[in-house]
Image 1 (cartoon, rainbow, N blue to C red):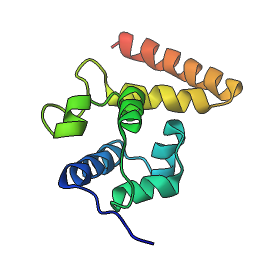
Image 2: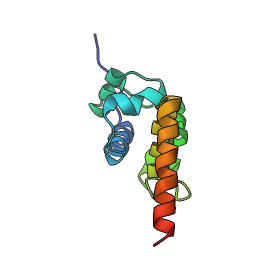
Image 3: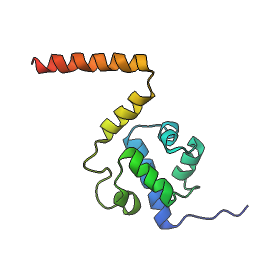
Image 4: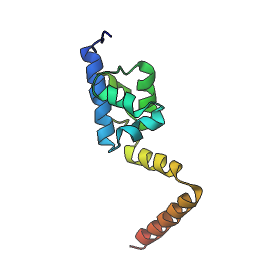
Amino acid sequence: MLKRSLSNHDFKINKRVAEIRKKMELTQEKFAEPLKISSSFQGGIETNHRKVNDRLIKIICLTYGVNETWLKTGKGEMFDTDKDPRLERIIRTFNNFEPQLQDYVMEYLDWLTSYYSKK
């Protein structure tokens, strides 16, 4: 089977995708899951065996609040400035919890808010 090598442009995009994942402290599996790709496909991106197409670029940007210009060119900030990637991660994690655990988290947040407002 003849392997097609990635262009320098594609190689840089793949490198930036790996950088996003590492910045967010996610495993390949956890990063790939909301993108609806396999962890092995994500691994292929990071080892430059898979190309990141325009559709996947859009999904990454929407899912993780990534600046599309940065992902494509390396120019600008990694994340959209109006979105906090930490908050996005909290929301994704919270949505994966069972309702009972979500209730517990909300009670704890209420307690934290009350505690810090008294200071």
